[in-house]
Image (cartoon, rainbow, N blue to C red; front, side, top):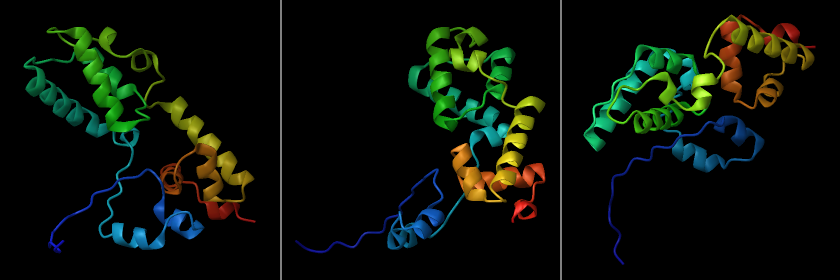
Length: 178
């Protein structure tokens, strides 16, 4: 019945472009204004390959603390982790390691302990996958007259991700505007 003064911080995350949603009228501007005090954009794990080793180390230490087991990762399994696309980011990586550790028991995590989609999936990087993304992106940018939103919808990703790809591949969408 009495007001109580509190000091809280709200941490929220999304894979959506909230600024674009506010502009479209599908996200409340007043809520966005309250949430956007400090914005930190973190690229998806597939674009932060250098973080995979650090994250695997943190996940393995957490498993050790929780189970008392001290799982180790074979070099071949580690290589396969670096090759995977990680479309669902760190959660997918954590579940993959937990899955592998459960199968490995007290032994070392080997490639055969990894989930099938990680063992057999497309390589994380390489000329063919990068070239395929570049070619598809270039075709969509040409067809849409340089429209980044159209490219984002075609890839089912955010405009900011498309802008990162455009920069990485050296594509200037303004050159294709009609």
